[in-house]
Amino acid sequence: MTELPIFYATTVHLDHLVTALDCLIPFGIKEEMLVTIDDQGLSFTRENNHVIKIQMVLSRELFQTFHYQPENEGSVTKVSLRLDHLLDSLNINNDHDEIIECTLSFNGDGYPFTLIFENELITETAEYSTYLLKDFDSTGLILDREQLQFECIMKGDILYNALHDLKEIGCKDCYFYGILNKSTKRPLFALISRSQQGLSKIILPNERSILEKFEIYSNDSTTLLYDQPMITVFDHSTLDKIRKSSRIASKVMIRKDAHGLMTVNMLNDTKDVLRSNDRETKRAKQSSTASLPIHYPGIIIEASMLEKSLPELLDVNEIESMMIEYNNREMYYTLPNGENQSEEPLKRTSTSEVPADDSSEYNPATEELPLYF
Image (cartoon, rainbow, N blue to C red; front, top):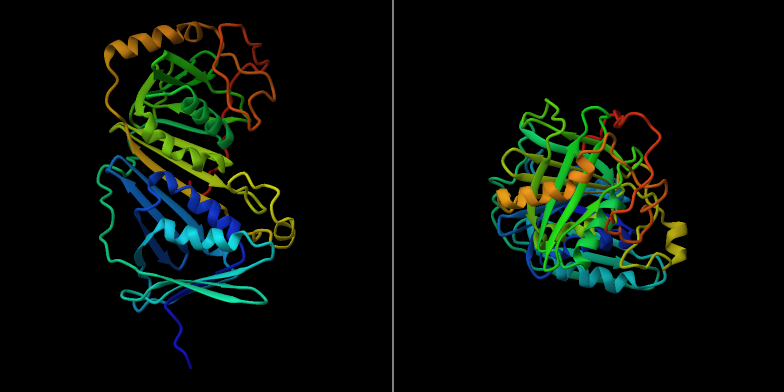
């Protein structure tokens, strides 16, 4: 009897695997990624210059069969792989019209990582050389949850549209600007771009259905700060690396601590085959017969990035002057219902008046977040 490998897992959701791994492409498609296997599923980690780190998790519920039995019970298995090698095989087989079963297999140090593709007519095996690398150094890239400065939860497509706009206008530095109105409790959240054209702003909708939670703290994760702006700056080329991830996110949590570290947690809870490379209509047969498992939580992504630097006083004064027309209003205005909720990029704000929200007070969502948030 052939001895089973310490890990193997089988799935027919190749579209989903490709969609998930595509989120790692901006972090270097030809670079090594660290794959961690445990009894809960798989995680894929990439880091760039110790400034930004991404971890993408696929839980075991995605797989029809999931077996993990290491020599030491409760331990994890880690292996380094090239992202482009995996994507090449997955994309080739993902282009077929029929459903293909994919089995991922690994037997520990010194063994190749194997993908096996099977349908009714053929079986194809691809083996990849594996490497022993140390874990990425996470020093300085772990959020200090006891000293949060800022926290918000919003719809993923809103963040994607904003990042898309920043890319289109040639953003060099991106400032996050946030403030809470003490009298109305309404938030104002904006992404401000510095480019060759100077400063421009994208005001994010503050409707409760879009911006579920928005809080600014006094660096203690507890004491709310009102009428005092929060301004932080990030290099756009670094920030833009999460644009692919935000495109598939249904919900996003953004948090920043007092040490200048921001984390962006993204969750996709789509119940059917995800869009991948704008191929929403491809393989109708697969989407109708191979919908994702009911208990599968979706793709879970966490990106951690360091603030570029402390904003210069001149920059802060210039940004506050730009935003004063909003800061001095009795109530922060919101965009009309339904606007900017489509796939179209957000438009930069103009000086024209926007109708005010009829609600008298901003009440953020209070429901408990999933554990992975």
